[in-house]
Image 1 (tube, one colour):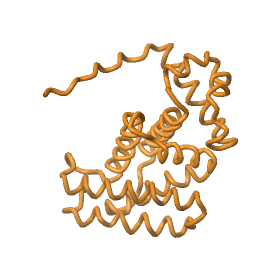
Image 2: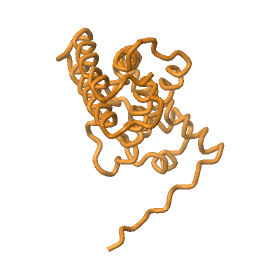
Image 3: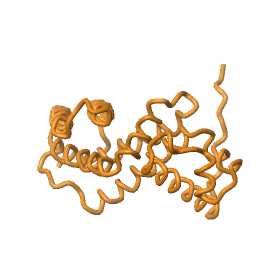
Image 4: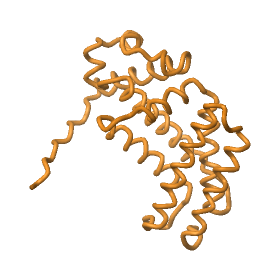
Length: 203
């Protein structure tokens, strides 16, 4: 039985993209002020200057919206990191430095970080495309820091997945008050050593 192939969505027009950016900005602003509960779809629509029905066409639920907000925040972070890449000598050091810079960026907006992480935790299968986009963005950030001479091999990709899981878990434990920033740093540096076990130094 052949699986049904869903047609891909057409690219957004310039006007639609501008509207989407206003929505994501409004979501981030509301979350920064009051966390997950402060992001109400009606208030987001009002702050973004769009009709409520229009908002739901872009994002079917608050969870969809906040996961997309996290992807947007990671994209901004990725742009910043490319302008000022990590300076560590080994791949493990560079990735650890990168993830701690990402962590500190989220630390400056703890309410926003909590809202986005809670949305990822609540996400069901209907949010899979948005969650996958967050994962791909995180993977791209880590691979950039590794500075590989070519495409990653399966062993390296496996190490990257474990690092992603650890970083996400560290965020949750810090946000819940069960881990200090110092402990998060130790955990991140420890898991990043997996990279140096996957083959020769990338540089």
